[in-house]
Length: 320
Image (cartoon, rainbow, N blue to C red):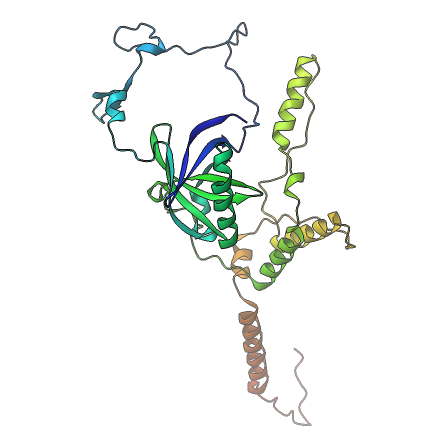
């Protein structure tokens, strides 16, 4: 793999020459923009707004734009004079437990390769120290003209580094959580736990990008002049019986693992009226209390009923 950056890890008084290598690759299908009339490629040219002339790369520089639209030119010499001690150094500043790093901060991943034979021993020393301590190293480094934060950890026999976002780059999740008082029953949580236990042993290597495969199939078919294969869209957008859906999900997950289960029933789609929704808000305890109150009222009514007047023997009762 080709290195994208050469430098050294600064570990106290120890300096470890390393090479930075991309640990990931983008496998998504990319498209070109074309002219619909004739299929020709659409290309972008860099044009100056003042003279409307195309500008070659050698005549293009940097500038900072203020909110009012004015631009301050910034030269490479200006940037070179800035203090950037991590320009060629990954400077370890702390060692912390891995679970203290918020996954929201994780960014691009890299592999760190030892830069030659002399770097092998200090490289292995740092690797084994990270393994034994069960910690990760927090470091500062500079890449593509800006200083960044990084996290070093061990992957197999290699030191990997994740670029980290700075803490002030993480937005607070304001207005994202559901509004209102939402209550979840214990029975629903029990079924959700059962489903999580059933799905907990998935093999990540078996997961595939279904959308990318469908796009590749469609491109291959169109290249051969054949109609694109049709795939059934995933069902969604329905309000379903949550309990039934959870129960059926548990059955299907167990069935996929070869466990014997009862046949799953389709989840019922329910359209709840306002009266039904109001009734569902009554808890079982309140329903029981309401039933007892009704029974007491009925008993009291029977006791309070007036006794019938006795009919004299000589008087006939008038028909009702």
